[in-house]
Image (tube, rainbow over all chains, first blue to last red; front, side, top):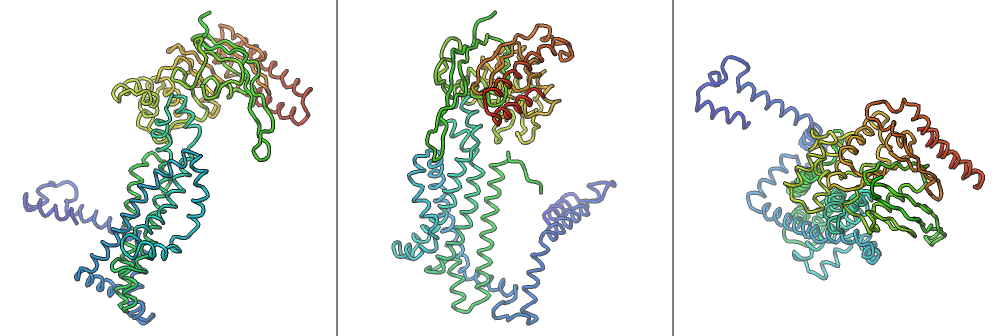
Length: 290
Length: 286
């Protein structure tokens, strides 16, 4: 589409495209249309199942295969979302959820990754903390939700703390494992080249551990969304979790479905950002056959 | 004969073996009474069956461990720890997978605190020396085994160590690549004048590369004999493997290793002897 736009601009500036490209080859217009069609068909190919499912979602309630009260057609869900967006309610909920998820996740990464690196590096520290870590990570974060609310109230603090807590365990365990799994031969090799302990850590341990740390980061992001939605459902005045549960209580079913879609979209965007970061930092990794 | 570069004086290395529950169970002697001089600029090959303590000897030289008794002197001073006066090339390359070939070569210089501009020239010189100037920006996973080992050799040479320690560096390569790299290594040795200690379990490889070949015994590792390789086998032009002298020296070393087996068979139980026998067959087979 953008190529078509530029084309019209070019036409306005220089006249007909035939005069630009001369007699040889197809005109830029034809080329542009071809690329657009090709791109669209590639997208269609990959999203075939998704499109089919959305079509089924639209059709099933309309043809009475399923009660439209419990599963409204896709278009009605989108219309409800449009309404939410216009009243500004959607913006409030999305921004509240994003703020909680992002701040909790980022605080957790900033605190826990260095802690994990230290525990992995100093085995004495690991021995000291091992039992405590085992107990904490085997206590499901959601089970602690009432405790957090009792101690920290129903405000932002308890929700962000929940997110930090739930992110902490996958981050911590993967970071510790990442440091411990560094190939001893690489350490040996760096030591023979006279690397000091600090250099060894910065130039060998850290880059070697990064891929496994990223596994922890991906797991933590999924955990952050899960716990966030649950805590917003229990006690909140805004947020997508609140939107979902509140819509259900008020029997605004299309709105409830839109809230669920919102969670999905945020999850997808989060994941895409992390994937892009991973690609950026780990260009040296062999690419698995597609 | 030129000055002594490395001197082993009755070096002994013991390890504490661990039994059930990780408690010390006994002591295992890996190396015993190693006394050997390596001269400056010499190419010394160390050959022995696997498990004879070759790699322990290399760790000692690299300063990664210390001898239980005895001394290892480098230029007359005891080795106190790892240092850039010795470069080690490992069998499994040990390249950093997140660094390109050039970045791997400059690792030692980076550690030494050289600035990027100064590192660059040295790096390209040594990549060129190992014939990889066109592959500077490739990551290790994009290189073949032979190329990886070339990068590892360039990396060890880049920070200009006086001694190059090589631990079966070509053992993981196919026969053809191995032979090419053996030739390249001799060329690099002649060009740089480094002292090289080359550990191998291949008799042919030891004879092709070494000016002297030290034959080790197994369990505990001792120096059984040091064999001078005739000057005619050091010729650059001829196919030395085809010379009669090559066969003679090869047979001499093979017999020394075989004696080891027979001794082991007489003293040890049949199971252990079989194991040693298999290992020596492995060695003799190459």
